[in-house]
Length: 347
Image (cartoon, rainbow, N blue to C red; front, side, top):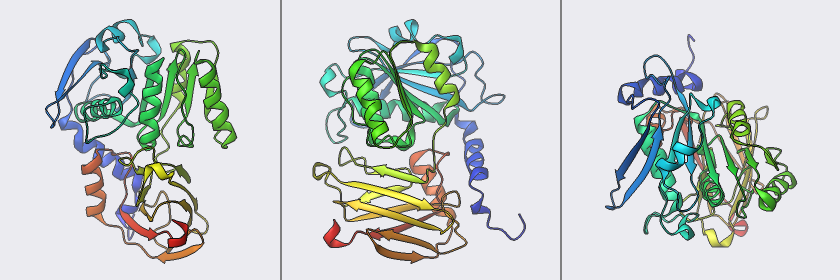
């Protein structure tokens, strides 16, 4: 593209960063379940079991879909993988079962400053697998059985931008669909709470949740085969469920008190090159942008609760690199940021 800014080529840069990581990936024990223990900076340990596809090859194949599974309470990760998720439809998928805290009451909690909880266990496992294997970051799924589905949903609620979808089997606990606008779900035999989750999603205008009374793993594998992550959605609705997860997709909420019920709804209009933000109980929003979201050759107009901001942004290579280095996610790249404040009387 003679005369064009190479940083505008978002998809090409995604492939550049993926290819740059290939030398870091390992082959693993193909077709077998392997137990892994990770020592954390706190001195605690996270354990998981992983099954690497027989077809896995860093050089000749990939990237590969990843399924992160939360077993039922009392079931170990190795035993779970030996008994479940063996359908031939998932033969080319990396599958990792997570060792969760002994106290299942902590499974849906996330507090990185305290003792290891359920959401942190999932996220540490995700990070370790992402660093070792050729993962397709646009095809990372969360799954659970029973109470495990609740933990998977809590993790997805906190970090919806990291996953392509969430699925579950068996009766599941109550969950809130508010942060699942761009995150599909499918439940098999989930009972009344699965039906309620799907109904709430529909009421919110999210036509992406399905509760099946009957079915099995084959139905979930088929759904995963068709599903890809929405990396740069045109509309984002997000309400932080805790004070530590304040970022979703191309937004970060500033001045968050999770107990106060903060919320943001942001919509991109590509034709007008504008972003409309409706914000409640926050002090500001940081936008992470690229040419897949807006046309960065033109000024970007941002409306925050009716207050207008307009800026011609410059693409920055250091911003792009730092974002990948920090998160390790080559499927979500941003070369510019823009900070906007929420009018004081609207916080």
